[in-house]
Amino acid sequence: MIRAFRGSSLYGRDLKVIALRSRIYSSTKLFILVSTTMMSSLLPSTICAQNVVVARPPVSPEAMALHRLVKRPVAKSTASVDVAESSSRVNSAQGFGALARDQGHPGCDLFPAPANIGTNVGLSYFGPPPSTVNQSLVGPVQLLNTGQVDATAGTITIPLYKGTVKSTGKTAWYILTDVSDPGIAAELGLNFSAKMNNITTAARTGNLGPDGNIIFDKGTVNFAPERNIVSGPEGAEFPPKSFTPGEVGDANYSPFVRIANGGGVVYNAPMVAYNVDASQINFPNGHVDYTKIHDAVQAIDPINMTVTLALVNGFSFGRPVWYISMDASIPLAAAIEHNTYAPLMGKLLLGNDDSAGSPIERIFIATNGTEDCDNPQRQGLSADLNDGHRPNNTLGGIPTLALDYSPAWDANLYTWTEEAISKGYRQQLREEFQILTYAQDGLITGASATAPFGSAGFSINCPIVQRLD
Image 1 (cartoon, rainbow, N blue to C red):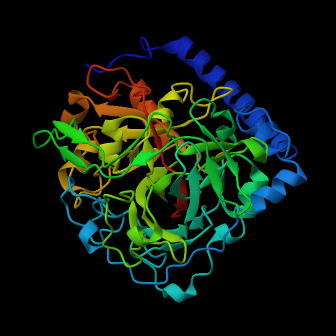
Image 2: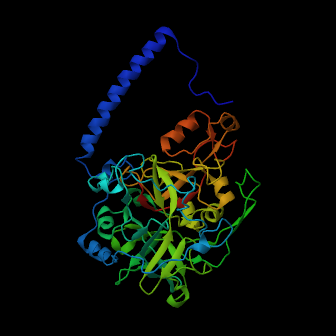
């Protein structure tokens, strides 16, 4: 039975009193909301970010000059990337599996339709999207602005960096996606995340060298393992019978790094290759050797210092988005996500969402959603393990839609109850508070039918790239 959260029904005078109180509460809430909005326009965003982060002083001019050395030209794809070998439905293959654009299959391609559908005017009549005036309005909006998005392939090409790991003296090839300082984010074209200031023991330490590359103190990744995953029976593919991630970090590896000589700023700097020279990872046209390179990489050019990464379909507050999936704190998540198992991420504080000091934002992942790419309601881990496409996860706040974005996502798994399925309620959920309401109403539970709804105890590093509308 669906759990009862609302108590017994109300009748007569009691109902009228409740209705009156509700109207008073709604009016008061509206007044507070308007007042808060007005105040927030006068205060720095880091102070108003749901009281998540105590505002940090800006980095010194000397530190800013050091961070400016990190800036690279906006990356553009210089060659046609052959992604055919990565687009099979075999989920256990090396690489990233199916990409974000499976055109003609509404359950696996979330790219919005042209604006002229159902009208009597041509597409050329429609002007630029309102997001060109205000990014919070109808998009598209590219949020990670260091490279070029290929909307046809569902990839992004961004700068590649060549650093070192001090403890081993070996080369670390990495990317940059997010940073904890708004000025540096604007300067470099990265995503700004105030919450990243709260990543403490889950971050490595390092320094910026004279060439703008990071010298990491510790943390390495072994890219040699062959990713393998054996799904459960048809219709209940999750949890899988067995799994092995395709890349494994050591105990000191996390994509997050605090820069000691740069004012303590935290970067999201996932590693894409380690202890190899340029000649060993030169795959500018695709056909990547995944025993040496991250599974999300579709092409890599260490001569022109660019890397092309697969994008992942998702939603944030009802809007389709694209992000990249780089690391996870447990092997199971890394195997399913085609990303790196990063043990040091296991020290992230989870379960507290937007409380003061929180380093995370929530991501909502269905376990037993509807399957089949031809079904527009497709969603979830069983669907992923069945057809090799991604699960269409729902993210919390992202830049332009909220102030509480973090690339460190606290995984909240949810399972549709048998009663909800039998009544035909199971569907594709695209918005955080819709999911929370379904959990409150007892239509979904946690990671299993018997687990309570909430954090599943692991996190995923998924930097946001683009809001599609």
